[in-house]
Length: 231
Image 1 (tube, rainbow, N blue to C red):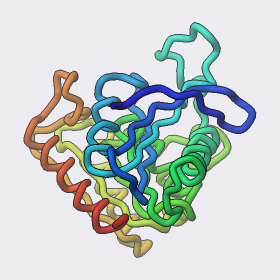
Image 2 (image 1 turned 60 degrees about the horizontal axis):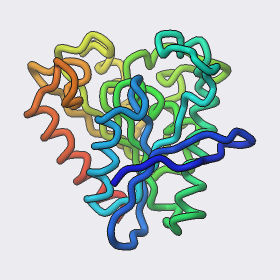
Image 3 (image 1 turned 180 degrees about the vertical axis):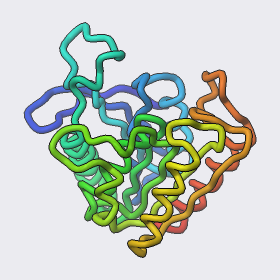
């Protein structure tokens, strides 16, 4: 179901992964992929979103990498302002090409994509009806000209749902505590789920730390969150 299309971000010709439901929909999801890019887990996420009735698109964030550059050096090129531009282009595509209602689009990301979803929720704050964030390590780190995701929390306008493993070290439970305290202080609408026995990448079925119970619970909670905020 999920497949690659040609996609334009500003003046850059690149690709995106999309999956569309069988019936017309008025709701859409922009997905930020994990550090492996368009891997089987990203395909599965978009397929599941389409099955649930959402038009889904994942932009290729790696269009900024020089040809042949390995992913171990991706952080030398990725910048948060570029993530924001990728999300804006994806949002515009859903509205323009799929006729999605602009007030019924959410943002979602796992791992590296969880961090960039924090970025999008603040840098593109007016776009989203909600944001679903898994793990999101490195969110105290600045990358580019924008403040770090943590330092940008006051800009967020949409409801947030976050999923974290208590065995994770990035973000650690203490890191998640800091985010939760700051969101609470700012009066933001958020729900955090934390899972004992689960570490980073607990939802990735191809990863050694896959945790079936945490994965299923978090996905079901995310689907309920999207139903409430998009439908």
